[in-house]
Length: 128
Image (cartoon, rainbow, N blue to C red; front, side, top):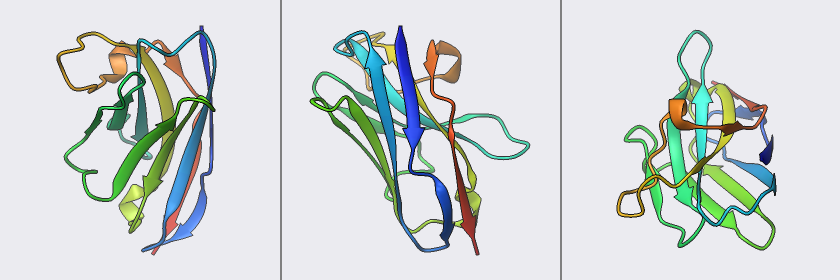
């Protein structure tokens, strides 16, 4: 079992920045990909970014490249999502996810249907 807990959400003005944090506990993450998803009101949960725990390779959705940066601190068992130049359309609940690595030869892209472990989410609201 992997337990995940997000933090760092809040109300931010457009153009500002936020760093979301995800604390992971439970079993070792050595063979896991860690990801961030977001779900806006009335929309499906969508992939934002992912990072492979071993090695740190990353993958981003096309819509988030350039403004979103995922990172991890192995010693602290933390995963972060830095969001810059926030836009009103970034308003969503952001979820941390953990999924066992499926193929070490591929980028750590995660499908929501493949995720066994989710955090409860943290709300990000961007005011314009």
